[in-house]
Amino acid sequence: MYGAAALALVMTGMGADGLDGARAVHERGGVVLAQDEASSAVWGMPAKVTEAGIASATLPLAEIAGALKQRVDAGRLTKMDTARHAASAMASRREINDGLL
Image 1: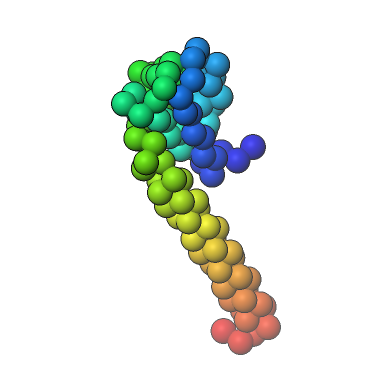
Image 2 (image 1 turned 90 degrees about the horizontal axis):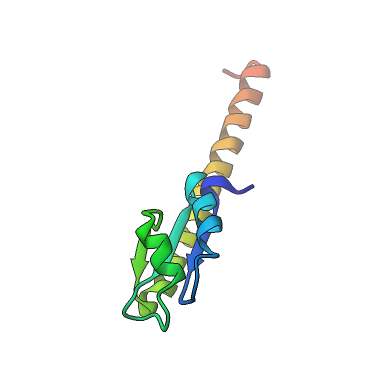
């Protein structure tokens, strides 16, 4: 649904049940972050994602919040820029249609 705007985070845990969802996000251009082995209590799920090559970054727990904030802020800027561009294009079309240009 969100495509490249999606952000997934896979943290400490057993098994591989997060792999399919993370793969879906990755295949649609989204960002997948995984917790690193050193800071994980159990490096099962983050390991599967990292080993599959679909983690955009594998980070220590202490860096995850900053990485999430950075990516969310970047997404907000992109959406704001897109909205500004659309508004500017609409204004230009109105001026052309009104014979101003």
